[in-house]
Image (cartoon, rainbow, N blue to C red):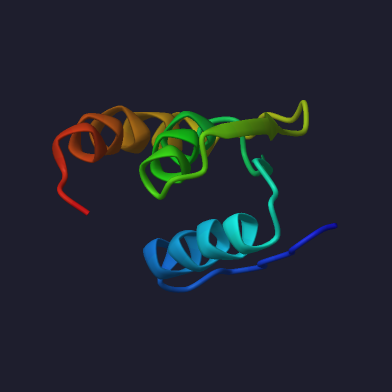
Length: 85
C-alpha cells in the first residue's frame, strides 16, 4: 500500500495520522521517500510518532541548492532531537 503526500502540510499531524492508520491495520513499517538530506530527520520524526521501523529511499541526485539544504538540516536535526512533540 502506498500513501503519497506531495507537498504535505502539517507534517506532524500527518505522521500521527499515519501511525494511527498503521496501528489500526496491523502494519509495522513505513517507507519515506524524499531528498537525501531530509531522511535522517524524517526517520526521527516518524519514530517519535510511533512508527518504529522506517525505511528510506532517495534519488541519486545532487543540485547546488543542496548545500543550503544540508546546512539547514544540520540545524534542524538537533532541534528535532530536543523538541517536545
